[in-house]
Picture: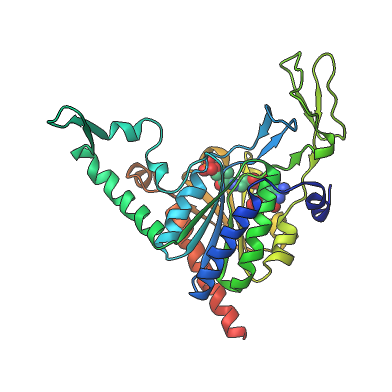
Length: 330
Ligand code: PMT
């Protein structure tokens, strides 16, 4: 596996990196002066490009539901939110009206002069739209949310470190809520081909070996391990922050074991473990001392309750206790 420092030494930052870094710096400085609590929510999946001039890539599964919904609930708890998301994945507020849903809520009417039209929300959609719009406006006007986006795993890693550099000043007041689905494998820059691979077969084999070949027949695309950034993040970049990672499994039997392994290895505060098929109504909170389930009943789910609401409420409560115990130690 590449060491995390080598990863940054061998991969250039994305083109918009300096702009994002300035935005992060300004946002964090302002909220730190106000002594606000802050959360970095990562959301959506990272890509692994197969070529320099990327046409094809490997993707990590995540629609961005967990992250975008959680960001809204953190705002409800008065946290300043850095929403670091995959470009074009779900975002807070707009997530409620995806696809043609938004257009279906609108009415178009001609004005009497016959030259122009007005557009209005249909009366029966106002009750749905108005509360979301109101919350969005407040979050934007009070500058409580900052949106920054990534696409590839390299973009993600650069942004993550830049955000941590700014968050360190918050000490215990910062929460890192790492819900993005981050690639464990990638093709290092120096092993990528320049142009689109000439795929002669639809079969692509992904093997974590060490070299990429393209020639006649099915290409072998070899992937390397991405360093686990949770390691420097928890121990060096934001050692005082409340760090929460997510663990996605497809096998229920491995859920707690893997979550505990992660806590033991990275020594952060909490792992929220979920199984792919049940993630929308059940998660398991795993701390160094215990584990318990947070779930929605069938009825609650039916009523439109989102599991992110109790998840965030629980994280906020744990964060408050964490701050209190840090203050008592001083
Ligand atoms: O967006 P949705 O469709 O609602 O889906 C939400 C979700 C299922 C994606 C989310 O709830 C979730 O489980 N996210 C984490 C998925 C994941 O990538 O798990 P992992 O086992 O690859 O990584 C575990 C932790 O290690 C993550 O917090 C990640 O930030 C971190 N990591 C991962 C890879 C890497 N190279 N370095 C890391 O630090």
